[in-house]
Amino acid sequence: MLKIRFIFLSLFLLTFTGFAQENTEPVKPQTYVQVYAEKLMTYKYLKNAAFSFYAKDMSTGEIIADYNSKMSLPCASVMKLVTTATALQILGSGYRYKTRIMYTGEIDTLNCVLNGDLHIIGGGDPTLGSKFFNKKGHERDFLYEWADTIKAMGIEKINGRVVADGSIYRYYGAPSGWVWADMGNYYGAGPNGLTCFDNTLKLQFETGPNAGDSTEIVCTDPYVPSIEIRNYVKAADSKKDNAYVYGAPYSNSWFVAGSIPKARDSFVVKASIPDPELVMALEMDYALEESGIDVVFAPITNRELSSNPAYFKPARTEIHTHYSPYLGSIINIVNRNSFNLYAEHVLCQLSVNKSGYGSTYNGALVCKNYWNNKVGAMDLHITDGSGLSRSNAVSAEFLVKMLTYLNGKKAGNRLKESMALAGKRGTMSSMCKGGSGYGRAYGKSGTMTRIKAYAGYIDSKSGKKIAYAMIWNNHNCSTSKIKEYCSNLLNKLSAY
Image (tube, rainbow, N blue to C red; front, side):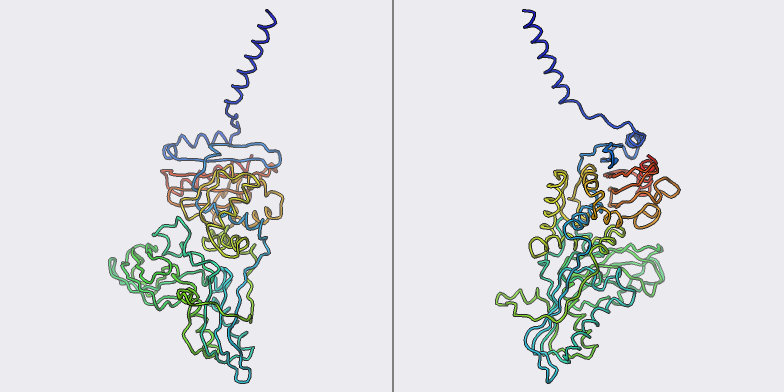
């Protein structure tokens, strides 16, 4: 009888212990970084905010800080880290986009005439005429180089037209989740198979001498003949650009509202180009004419031609292939300058690599599936490559797991090199000055209304290699104040 009671008591204790273990939450780290993170959430303007924070010593596996690390939140431009990390793993830093110059018909060498059309076949290169890879005033040099190549083949006349073909990205215009208020502005320029001049349309204004005066759009660069822009912009005492452009991809009816500084002969407001493929056709046609090559018929786009159900693409012969800078250089711009357009092109190219055509949706699936197979990605929700969509969400834990997986790998080293550096370069150049994080905290920042986020690597003072991520949503303080709190966290991590 005593033996039976002993067995029953033992089973009860084992069951109770097992139940307790299953329902016990992991012990939180007791580091001063953790203490500071928890203290922040008691502050008046932060206590109602959502906060996901995670930091880990990648060498030992020690969890330095964990606050709601599994909570998925919109992270703004920190999503660019996921996009670029995936591209470095799959495409490699040496990958290059290709733009091909081709022709249909035949070349009459005796009379130096191309009896056919000249086709520009886009491969998704985002750098054609880009300010990041061309000196000011030299953005159109690539067009004249192409014209010289055509001329060198003995072509002095094209008995046809220029056809711009950006169909590799399927004319989606803008990624899912982008809002109307963003798409007309330069930072909301969508990806295109034949992107040019960063898909940026510069509106040159002339303003009156007094606040409240009307303004005039003097010209646009590049020239878009079909676009109609209604101007509601007023002159103001402010020295800032407070004008916003509203319009959708492939639409010809746009308007611009807000205010810009008064008494200016030339003030530029940057918008997005509604139809980059058309601009490329027009610009190439002009470059050919300037180079002495006569083009008989007006330029046209593949999108316009394809609207005719009877149209089929004729056989084409290649003249020249233009290669972009290396992907690693493009990713530097994505992560240090937080350039949305380049990020979207990187994501679309992941789709091209897998399916033969560019799609934001397919590129997002490539990212999701890749990291799901590597570290698990239930807490990753990606709808674009840049983070401009508020339907993106990710947890701090996922970002740290991704960064830890890449640590020591070639792609990881390249990703770290592409990041901003606290106090020194990129979007973090004003952070951690005078603190431990100065020159030690690498990262990608993310900023939108009521969103602030950072993720990256830290080389701490004690020699630790740390991966970290922090995401704030719906804080009630200013952007500068939340940035100060983030700087403090980075300084504490860097001193750990």
